[in-house]
Image 1 (cartoon, rainbow, N blue to C red):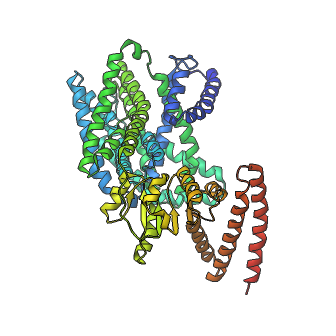
Image 2 (image 1 turned 45 degrees about the horizontal axis):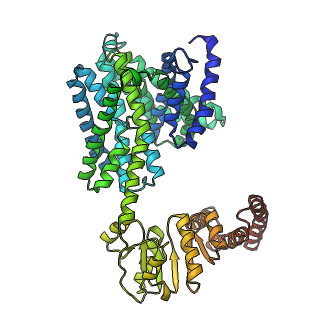
Image 3 (image 1 turned 90 degrees about the horizontal axis):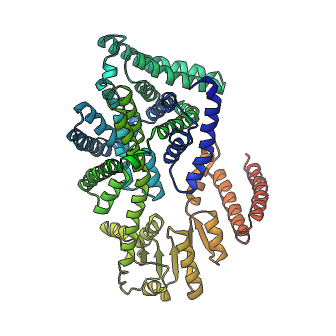
Length: 589
């Protein structure tokens, strides 16, 4: 890329990022897929605005180096120990089995064992960005399934460095290069690098931070990453290894979060540029010229990984549906595969045609995985609809709990410990089955149905605790109870302020926001930590809670009027400041 083309190219990259990413988010597409699409649009296969994708790719590899540095910063020993079983047991099994299977298939079709080894390694990796996004959308991150998936992804991230080293070692172009230092010199230099990073780097970082100039600390972070990468490159090792090790050495530093914050914008932009460059290199013409080859690669990748990971999930004592879900979440290729395949091509280990086909197959797998997983989840909903509600035994209970998740279970345990009978309903059959395994008494049933409430004995019920997750379900049950059973006292959980407004507008008198109490308690502890007495902190917290509740009640009548809500909020801030100031003055000794 000529210097005269630099500014227009930068303009194209920024314009594509600003336009394509927000549009893709509206369509439900992930950022990586959007960057790939933008690269295809800009590259030779699209408008041809960028004529040399390889030059862009070479520069954009800095984004991968920065990503490895941030990855090193996040690897606390405590975090690794907590997930040790998922990481080193499940994760290593997944990597080795998928690597072996996919590598063997590549070798059977006629590739050299070196090429098959690299291809198997590259395709065995999954996309952290895609997997985390999928689990977040479907609320699976905090479940046992989510923790196991995260453990596998973390092991894959840890394995990238040795796989990069292996790829560089196997590549003929790399092997033919003259080593700057003999092997013992490399080990000595690497050991010296670790000693400097362990003992001298934190001191130097403290001096830079004490200067108080923010941009100097940012410059130091970039210098550290690029310098470490260049040193490893000079030693004949992976540039990413230097950045990764530098990050690990600073993982326990008090400046870790500041460094991560300073690096993040550069990492995000350059990593986006890297994916754009990969998109520019994707040969979409293969879809027309060799559709059977692409179909074979894509189906082999998805089916092989889904099968291996699904079986491992079953051995991990997940149910069949959870095991299949795990396989689908991790079936796609990963962003590090682009790095490995590109390095293998530059090193002469893989032909350009093979790399182009594999890169395109990985990109297509990223596009298909969210669709396949969403379709799979839809079958679960159909099965739920076919399951008949449980028959509820007649009881003398005067309490019904709709929704037996975190909030409902805590309330139910307190009632049960106090000898107060209740009927609990939940419409998620899997959750009902899990609760029953732990001895919980809960019935499968949908509280939005009038007949279900009647079967639960709402006619003789005095109190109904509304603790369902879904906002619309919560409003539907509240409306139903208010209309048909006005004698019942409704105590409703609200997920947020807007949900509380809508419940109050329906006439529900007792509404509690699920995180308000714990957040208020945390703030009270903060005040005590700042030196206030327990009584002073409690008084201020009580004043805040009463004032906030008054604001919620005032806002409920105007919850459709944004301007009115803003006005009420601004007036409330001034009034609250005045009230808390009065509390402080009264509490002065």
